[in-house]
Length: 624
Image 1 (cartoon, helix red, strand yellow):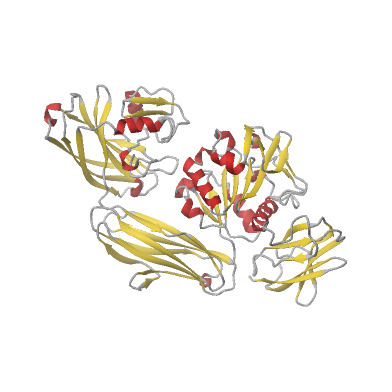
Image 2 (image 1 turned 90 degrees about the vertical axis):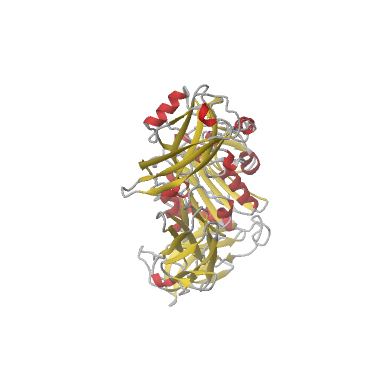
């Protein structure tokens, strides 16, 4: 089969070997153009199954149109077995690899063809969007049918050098060998060359919330998946903000020996070394996150894998899935959440791979953005992971103006977003909030002058709660059901202004989304329609630096409401609210500044909520 390459592809695993011959982008080469000409490719995408069947056009998957074709080809027994071995190593020239290929073709049945060639292809898993990308095709070798009579074999030895490796990671480079009959251009069998020095790290989880002086522990299984014994160097890097001594991190073997630096461990082929990674909040004074990376490097070929682990101290575990390719639009969401006192961790499918369900479930909230990119980067597997995350009680903010326009309807759209229809690219430059909505009440978000063309924003009809509209239709929704919550924007969050007055800015919008995720709608708190008394909740985070969120609720007919911050001497520092406001839940952010805009000093402060009838006070700690 001319089909998969080292990773599971649908239900077919290694029975399916996939090769992508690019002809219209930066990955196109002379070899890929030649191959497209060989198969008379016209429009693209164009899929050729073993040279026996062609499918032209997009929108097909392994599970539907492709599935029956693949299964019909798998049912055809191949008359040739392939035994391939060799090596791929990084060369001295950065970004290139070389290696060797040793292959034996053995006839197990009558081939019935005469114009046989052996093909040798080096491909790269560039990223989640471009796996199986053909980088080089070595010179083909002619095979006479007479040389492959039943029971006989033919052997070839090939070497290669200087093959482009754009990810600068030889682990992403692979070799496929296949034998084909050039008339009628059919692949007879194919095989992926196993790597003698392959290995993998698999962790039980990657993110954890801890209390002050708490410890996060992650179990990591490090397996030699190659065919040869190897010695691996393990090492640590850390990203600890502020005082580096606020965190302590190490990794330990099963015999109880712990390391804070590099060490070498021998692992036989097929064996697994189990390590535990520890991240400890040492000082117990700062609300923040600590990130530790564990690297595993092969002594045989210098290949390296890295796993990152995140500990969130006294703050929710928030993941930003930066699905905008190589662009940098994720910084808008990062800044908006950070300004609210949160410490999000960002992962890019473009460089790190798309997170699956096990990784998503590590997080209290996930913000998934495609910014201006085509939302086809959100694969069916990613949608399955989102749905599994929501089924487990997750909180998802999907910020993607192109998501609907890149889809026909599917389970996620129908059963989770409850979108019944939509219109592509309806534009709209003023997003108007919905009265009495928890998130958007009183908001009017101007998108003009933003970094992304908002003209591609979609409009939709839905049975969910609409939270933003414009003249062209509904633009955002929220839904709370079955223990999970979703916020969906069909317009670019990045175009919301950063410096417009509250509430019409990115910081407030992000904060209100998190407030809604936090809000308990099960009846533990006062129902939204029956707030009978004044309530001032503990600020989060606390201690904080430099911003914190203060949530409170106001009863009906409360009249004028004042929320102010005082220092330990009873002196007024900042008035945050001074007006009549409607009954129900509210929140406000204090940025650690006084009325004159000056940063205040480290210390204890008091938030005081006052009406004509009631007063409530909480204590807050600012630590710098």
